[in-house]
Structures are given as structure tokens and as C-alpha cells.
Image (cartoon, rainbow over all chains, first blue to last red; front, side, top):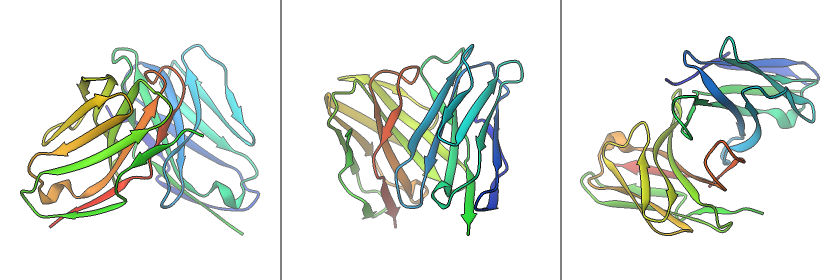
Length: 111
Length: 114
């Protein structure tokens, strides 16, 4: 049931773009994205609901393809502050209110 | 700011000990959660609670129990600690279940069982 995230890790130079993908084999109601910096608590980025629109958060945006049960997180013109581990959390239609997180994608932005 | 506070950042316990991990939130959230975080496995849900004295099992409840006697406090109990319970434990709270607003996480408790 755990969603699959790809890539596992990515290294970027400042200003480059990145895409992190999250997919599930189950029908999803929502997808949540969090970022965790080293030694800190995960912090909410955004939630995408079934039937909802693509979301944006500064230069970070996300989409949700309901047909494919996939979500993608887009990081544009990456900054050093974007470094961290990104987790997607998926809520299935048949499992109300229970969010299952993926294994995470480690993103490192270097000067 | 919402604050979720976990009582300890680091704990070292012996095998077989009963261990209590405490979590307190100050935003009057109905829902509280305990996750376990291990490298390569992400965040795995142990238990969650949507009201005082109410609890639901998550994906990996074996070897754990929880207690929620007051709305602001959610305790995770390891009845008899084992070395495979060495991990980072994260508590979270949210205003209502995850279909609503975001969850707020505590700083985590790194538990080592020796």
C-alpha cells in the first residue's frame, strides 16, 4: 500500500529544476506533500484532492493525475533552502482518513 | 504557531523495559498520530487518535499501545522494548482527519533499545 516515490535521491545545482513522482496502485482520494530538513520535523507543503486543481507554493507546485493515481512535485529554479527529504502521503478512497507515506526522496541543492 | 512537543529528543532503553513516549500539542487539535521513521521506509503509521480515549491502529501497531486521556496529550507505549524498535518516532496532530488541513509534526524522539 505504500506509495512509490522516484527518484530516491537527486542532486541539483542552484537554479535547476526537479520533478519528484509519487504513484500508488490504489485509487486515491488525496495526495499530501511534506518536506523534512535534516534533524527537523516534516513540514507540510500542500495537499491535492481528487478533482482539485494543480497547487502551487512559491516555486514549488504539484499535480495529481487521478487516472494514473500519480502525483508529481515540481521544484523550479531550485534554491539551497529546498534541500531535504520530500515525502508524499496518499489517502486511498477506501481507507478514509488514513494517510500512508512513501519512503521519501532526498534532494540536495548545491551552489 | 502550532506546537507539537515530544518529551525527549533522545532515549536509550534496555530490552524488555516498558517505554513511554509523550507528545503534547497546544492547538486544541482533535487528531493525533504516532509515526515511526526508518531509513528507506519513510514514515509508517503506528496508531492514531481522533478523540479522547479513541484510537485506531495504523499499519504497524504490533508491540505498541497508546493512551489519550486528555485532548492535548497522546502517549505511545512500548510494552516490552525490543532492539527492532530502535527508531525515530514522530508525533503529529491535525485539526481533523487528514482530509482536512495539514498535520503538524513534533521534532521526534530517537529511541535506542540496547
